[in-house]
Amino acid sequence: MKDLSWRFGGRMLRSTFSMTGLAALLLLAGCGGTAAAPAASGGTGATAGSGAAKPAASAGATSAAKPAASAVKVTIAQSSNSLAFSPVLLADKHGFFQERGIQADVVLAGSGSKATAAVVGGSAQVGSTALGDMVAAVEKGQDIRIFGATLVSPGGAVVLKKSIAQKLNVTDSTPIDQRVKALKGLKVSISTPGSATDTNLRYVLSTYGLDPERDVTILNTGSVENSVAAFAQGAADGASLTSPAVEQAILQNDGIALVNFQEVPELKGQLSIGLWSSGKWLDANKATATNVVAAVWKAMDYMHQSPQESGDVVRKAAWESLDQKVFDLAWKDELAALPATPAVTPEGLQSQIDFVGASDKRKVNVTPDQLGTNAIVDAAKQQLGK
Image (cartoon, rainbow, N blue to C red):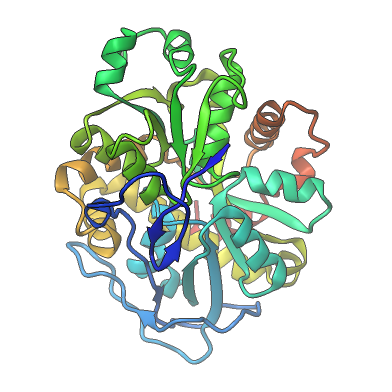
């Protein structure tokens, strides 16, 4: 895997080409925590690291509950800012956490491994990330349990330059095995090793007969923004991206979605992104965890029942600078992968375990019971009267 270097966000990474115009390609915007809310029963939490933000105003927004000193503070470590994490963003910005007595501080860790380190180290209580890292962590003996699902079937896609697709005589309607094999010999950018952009790409390549280490040059760029920049400036022939970077590459950077991860049969129904914590914290703070899940569940219901309104809240909160057409297309794709409930099913967990095994080409010694629990979702279901 090649490392590229970039100057981005004050960091110096090695680069082989000019980053002129990178600012115009920025996708991600930070999202803050919510204000404090009425008390939730049970639980302890770390003090929020940043000032509380009020829920974004929008048509049909819930009334923000008055702050209360007894609100339970919960720091949620999120791997990155992507539309795939919209349920947590909506729970934060639309007041659903407040309604459940949770003062949430959503912090962007930068990667799944960094989010894991934050939760294991105690600086965060809950993780919100792609779940592949959790499989490896549990296999290594770390005390981690998945307790809520927010995305099924991995979002994102491998995007290819139209000019290259034309030379290779492939389109988005070409049989999927031929599309994947067309990537042989090409350079494909990802954000970071172990991220969903990396693991999804490797899984798809392996599934359709390509060796990720030999047949494709995978460029580690350090972030989704950098991956888009590499694609836009021609340093990469293709890019493995998440939404809304996928839609930006298609609409603004002359790309086509060569392989949409949701169309890969083996990935359908997989619990791709979710909520997790340490087993110790869950055992000691079941009421707080239940309130977190109940709030996120209400956000998911809001997305299903009011897609336009909920999309407006999400865009105003974190994606206001993004082109409206790009956002609208990305939001449509996001809703397609949103589960009806945050249930953690044995089948979904097994799919994630199998995914990691196939990506790493080895047997994974983890069972669904070791990896996750549906007890918190069951409690939230009862709380919400569902």
